Length: 72
Image 1 (tube, rainbow, N blue to C red):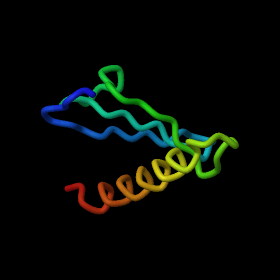
Image 2 (image 1 turned 120 degrees about the vertical axis):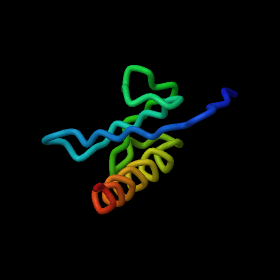
Image 3 (image 1 turned 60 degrees about the vertical axis):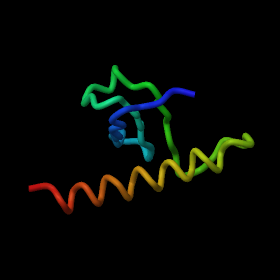
Image 4 (image 1 turned 90 degrees about the horizontal axis):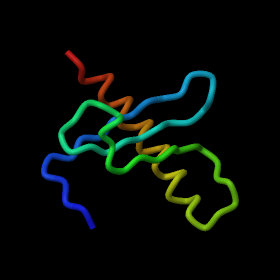
């Protein structure tokens, strides 16, 4: 498993679609540097791992809200 020295979570809410793209980088603001990237939606697709995708969706939504409230 990879070890990130300075993990940074990047979140992009897709326009006209109720989903997020979440990228984890090693201290980069560029989605293209994502070491872990997931698309998260509020409803699953019938796969065993769907619960994690749904959880990621709500975590991304909460982080986006928090960041919006704390930007200067």
